[in-house]
Image 1 (tube, rainbow, N blue to C red):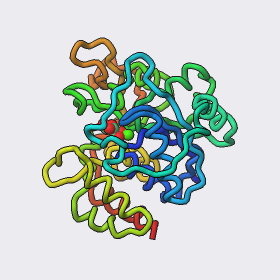
Image 2 (cartoon, helix red, strand yellow; image 1 turned 90 degrees about the vertical axis):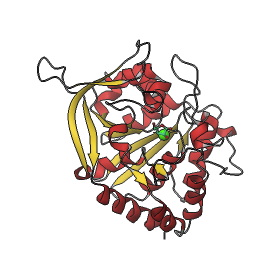
Image 3 (cartoon, helix red, strand yellow; image 1 turned 45 degrees about the horizontal axis):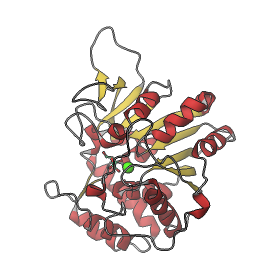
Image 4 (cartoon, rainbow, N blue to C red; image 1 turned 60 degrees about the vertical axis):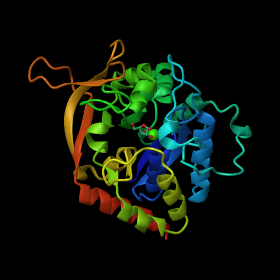
Length: 306
Ligand code: BDR
Ligand code: CA
């Protein structure tokens, strides 16, 4: 039976790869897409998500979510993802007027409670929408199979030495989620820094009808400096891929919590790696991947647009 998921995203260049990959994964059904303030403002992330749903001819509802984190002021990553969130690419003619009054918590609640099977949440942006849902409607927990996230890093961050972007933008929301009792699957930087896209792969992707030119433009206009000879880190893809292909990854069962008060470590996802007196495990932490299998699967799914 197909896995039913809801993707909560902030597209974002790597979110774009994750969405287009997920649309072509035959063993998952995407029930809903929600958006959040993150890489760019929520209006931009919403327009980007709608643009991609249309481009890929998908029949999936997109609901606009939180404008800002629970406590902190919004912080964006347009220095990395470009002003639109997708490098120099902008989807024309997306009308957000009908999304003005979107109620993301209600929409998530109804999608989860009305589903016969349990739902897996896949948040690949800051965790504001997820935390608001869990705080307002804790009864949804029984209907959520797992939360597969891109976020954090038990060895450290990218936003600063301690914290990863999706966590540091809304640390309180991340703490609510990690402490919810729902099993977490964590594609943090420990594994995502290994999910790199190289020029030869992009050359092949660029030739794919429907999505090739789009993906080529957003990667090439990514203002982030290159790391080695790679073009991009495909962080968000892994939160989807692990659901159907866990055998590609090395996964450790650990207890993870979020540092909220550290003067230099606010937003750090700290894992208990002691061998004694441990907290109960709440997270499957992905630490490594089989790069060849990851790359083959990614390319195979993207080629399904042909
Ligand atoms: C995460 O932050 C965002 O910039 C990316 O889209 C990804 O979800 C990586 O730290
Ligand atoms: Ca993201």
